[in-house]
Each structure stands twice: as structure tokens, then as C-alpha cells.
Length: 90
Image 1 (cartoon, rainbow, N blue to C red):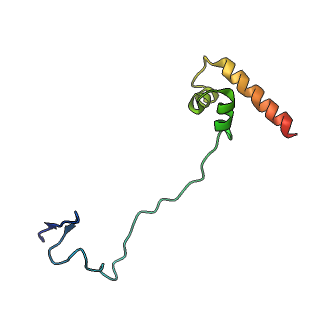
Image 2: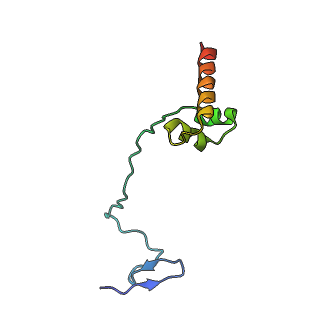
Image 3: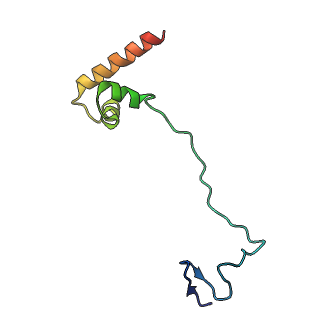
């Protein structure tokens, strides 16, 4: 077991190696690789819709997922907004 020392850089370095020494050649640096999954977009354009309706995006999301059941008026306004957007796109 080798003794480690604390350097001014803040790294624990074995005494036989200095922080300025190049890394050992032939030793691959293995880092875990995160594979990005495509995001699932349940309600496209929810941020812009919430701004038009004058509510927070999180509140609108919770109404649409059914977490907030008491805000039925907001759900009706959202459905009317989406219907108007569909009619305007055609």
C-alpha cells in the first residue's frame, strides 16, 4: 500500500508521481457513457399554451394529467384553445 500525499492542487497523488507527469500510456480512461433516450413529449407546445391561458406550465400539466381535478374551467379553456389552433391551421 502506497502512502498518498495532499498537494496544493487538491489532488491525492501517490508520492512516486507528480501532478505534472503525463498520464500513463496504454491505460485507457474508461468513463461511463450515458445513452440518451428520445424524450417523450406528451403535450407539445404546453409552455406557449400556458402563457396564453395565463397559468403556470406545471399547473396546466397537472390539469392535463388529471392530478388537479378541481380546475375544470382551465381544462375547458385549454380544449377551446387547442380547437381554435386546429381550426386556424386548416
